[in-house]
Image 1 (tube, rainbow, N blue to C red):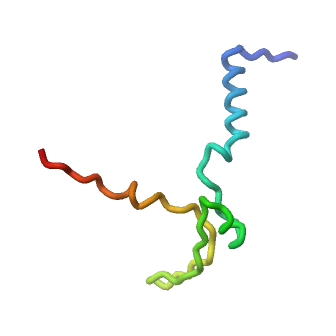
Image 2: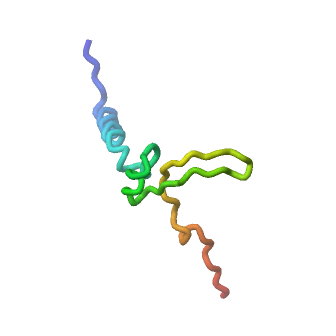
Image 3: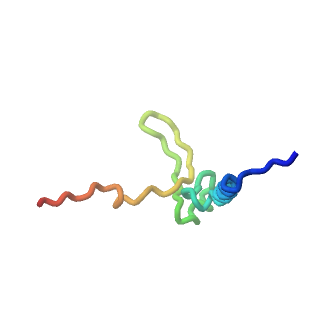
Length: 81
């Protein structure tokens, strides 16, 4: 039995497959799971040493994506008219 897919639907499936395969370049930096040396080599990653929270929870050392710049997080200045 042969299954025929309508051309527009087939093209959509091809585009979806290409985007899924290129997922690494489309998504944010994947820093999780890297050891300290590998993490420090990547510009988009930062290594966080282990620490204990105020509530006593111990957090293991890990690699993570760098936070967005504080410049983009600041509220915009309001100018008076």
